[in-house]
Length: 318
Image (cartoon, one colour):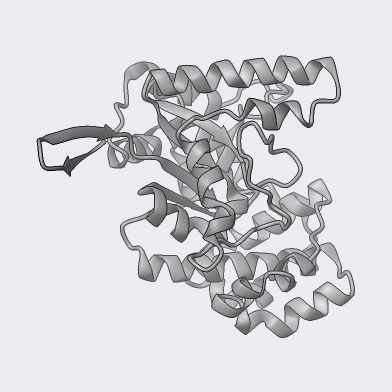
């Protein structure tokens, strides 16, 4: 929580502003789990992936995102600033949502979201934006909205194994069609990205390049923003109750016994058939990639991510 003073000719007005939280990093790195566990705090309100071009609702965020991993900076912020400001201030856009309603269930969703946003605003909640798709815009978001940042990092083989299981491919034209992103951050990868944009590659090769690009950016952030919270998926999965306690402390949130017990419930899953997408057996999830990938795939991933991965993982992590 931070305090600002506005000074005018007549008096000094003390205004309390709730500091937002951004949970981002590589996708398939447990960002939903981490975001939801932090949002167990009664002072935090969870906002799910406004940068997601498929699932985002205009009532929640009215910005028009045309590319996966949209990059926002000072040069193009006029296209996004007001919409994201409204989102983080819990200003629900009823008319924007009404314009895209197609079925009765959409109306129910509209009223539910509108009521939630109103409650969040009246309760002065801290907005928590969970969005791995916002990774390249993290610096701009942190600066413009004074946000605490959590960056999630995941082992390259685990990342590739997760993409392989989900069969998630990626169109690298999403990078090429963002000249500011290519110019400011991804020029070292231009030849590879252009090659992958022209012809679709094997899903493992796609995962390798995508992991390298994202974690190259994370390395930049670590140098320029050492005060951010950089969390390895494997570290928080091994001992979630302790690691979440540390995060709560860094975010100035109360880590109560109720929250501790709830995190334990959602992180140590005894019933392996349970279908809740948030509940998990976090420890066993660490090494699941060894069953999903062949030995040749693991060797290929290790070789082609080594220069960047060595900054996060040792030989023992393979």
